[in-house]
Length: 208
Image (cartoon, rainbow, N blue to C red; front, side):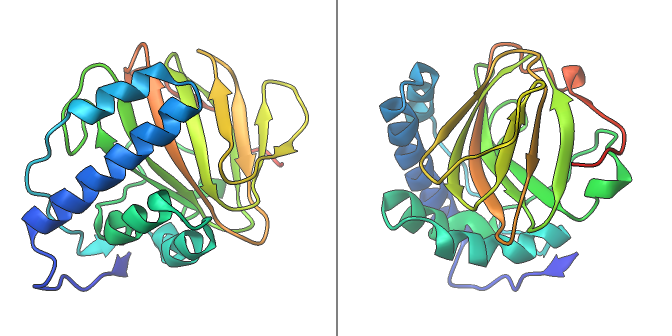
């Protein structure tokens, strides 16, 4: 785990405000990409958000990922809060090959900083030169790439590079995988439909 200094100049209420600003800008980006469910994000209120003290190993890449993001409101608001959020690797079974290579945070949802039973929304980070094996779930999913040169695969299709600003859509039960090159992948993710994490399935160790 990577220690992150918790400074007095970023109190809980200020961090909550930074998160709320990021979510508002994220909603605008998703709406511009045609994802109507993102409008739900605009109506949420955030309680004080406690900053993280330790983080999963992959979060060492967050600074590089944010610096590589295209200039704009998303990058600006993300820089205010991303490294202070409590990132996780989750509690679901996962292959040993991805250990230490990824992290995510749920900002809005049943387990989020702001509660919602209509969507799950958050951030996903994948370290350089890592492969996240094929996986699926019942929720419909919309990734919005923020930075990185990752390649994405859907079902049995070829891997395709998706640039920052690209929307990556997965219908329910679409198998999908991601592999990074020399730069980390940072993306927003949005789930709609069945939000039950229990439907998540991931392949055992496999090569890219």
